[in-house]
Amino acid sequence: MIRSIEHIAIAAKDTAGLARWYVETLGMRVVVDGGPKGIWFVGPPEGEALVEIVPANESPRAEHTRDDAGLRHLAFTVIDFDAVCNALKAKGVRFVGNMSGTPGSSTERRLAFFLDGEDNILQLVQRPQPLGS
Image 1 (cartoon, one colour):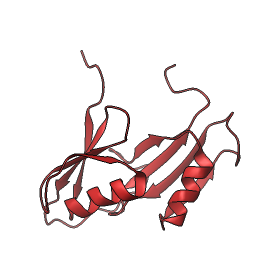
Image 2: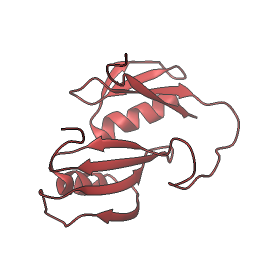
Image 3: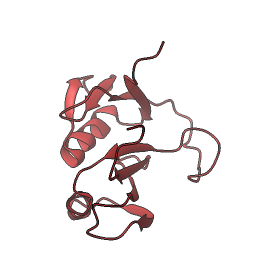
Image 4: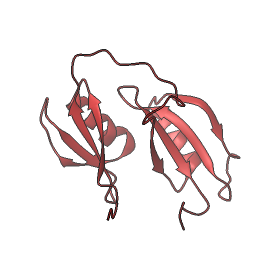
């Protein structure tokens, strides 16, 4: 049966540009360099799950809200929620919606949604205990 998630895919108008955003903004590493218009794989410095960035077709982007049916966001766990949020804000990252949890707390769940370089919805998560543990 299934052991783990290997990757998720994001279709991008500029695959190299979005890969660069994930590396420069989120500190990810390049696993596969797809060149100017090819398929890229990026991932966190540690861990197995990767983000595949594939060329998008010419169709216009459909507008969605966070609760429409279908895949809606990609969540990343962090250890120091406030430090990561502040670092992303300093890089000009746009957060959307309200952050949940008490600032400075490491004993409760903390959540924040933000947009990547092509306006895909991402989420930061800090939990006192990982889900499923």
